[in-house]
Image 1 (cartoon, rainbow, N blue to C red):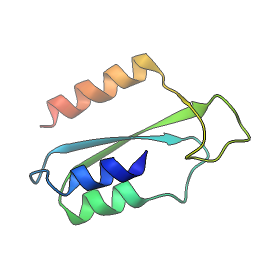
Image 2: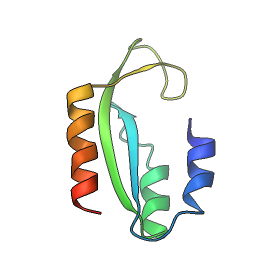
Image 3: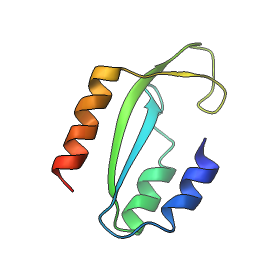
Image 4: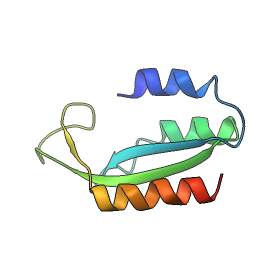
Length: 80
């Protein structure tokens, strides 16, 4: 899930928004945050559960809270 997203970030203009879905227990994977900071992009993230608690970050399906997603999108729009 990170390959294409990271590549696309290279072509974004400064101050555009990035929203990353992260697993609730993933505190070590900071690649999107690091690249967004270096490119001067606005970084947002949403913590999500997995459909399988035994899965790694790259191997499972994320369960996204739609209400929280709406709030995060509205926040991103307001801060644009």
